[in-house]
Image 1: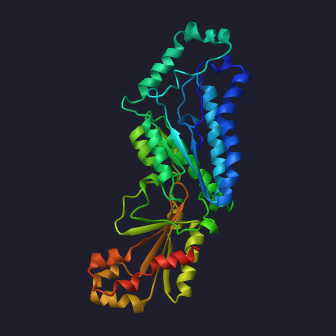
Image 2: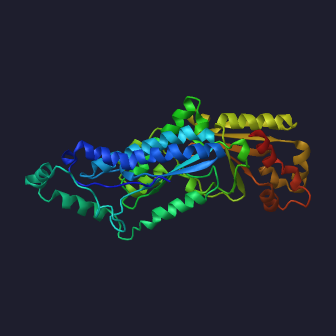
Image 3: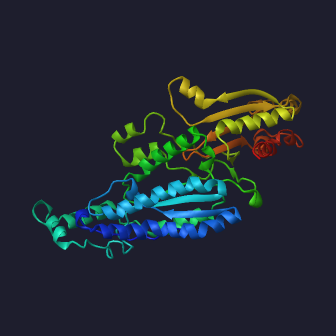
Length: 386
């Protein structure tokens, strides 16, 4: 985990270039030194996790007099994003924790460095700038709710570390001041995901399982965990900002999280949406199943000038298997033929979701022995995505 960092406070003009270099060395190059030592071992074992402690200052609203620290944290964040793509095929996962401002509970400001050029710094405390430093600190402190607890950052790290491989969020924001970083990162990470897929590198958006440590992708009951979602642009804007921010997210970058779905199981795919559904369709046909229709929801939206995430539905089945269910319980025809939904979340991960056979059986009261007729979807998906 990369957590090294030191803050400085003062007019950026008054810092000697060497001071900026020292701060960059501590906040950015230290991570590079650790990576060069640790990553060969993680690649050798075929799996791993790198956690970066970034800062909302990298993309959020930023007060003056903190530029050297902000610049270094922005560089560290950019390094983390690049590493995420380069390490994915080695089975190494990346998760970036993004704390906002915590003016209490830490010694960040108390122990902050100051400019070496005190004469130049003094020029920023006269005339129109008289008391400017105190004004900045007071304004920032007022933006942070009194109940903000920096322990939430540590809790977020523990939560991420304890999550199963392949399910960790790319970013987790803990920003009590709500400086806007979450909005900008949501858009930027979506753009990154779209670009990687466009140049044929969409697999870099999720860590690849290595054969030597191969385990089944996690199956998530109901909607994938809430922590997988970047809090949605729409929700963030509605709660935190005025309407002008809405225009920034127009044209397909606003995505809403769906409510939990009882009886739905979801698992990750390492392939893009189109390739995932192609594989499932091919596997279904190879088993003698009839593919009735393949619906491209995302394509349909684009055809009418609307924007949405990539999402396709495959409808398939076997009349010999499904007919006895509908004879026994006609309303089960609402769930037949079987359906598999392949969709992309805001981070760019691809999910395969389907109705659980046990839930269908319970919902419609299927007689004993009939559930097995529709219980083969998980195994079919597993085979298709090997």
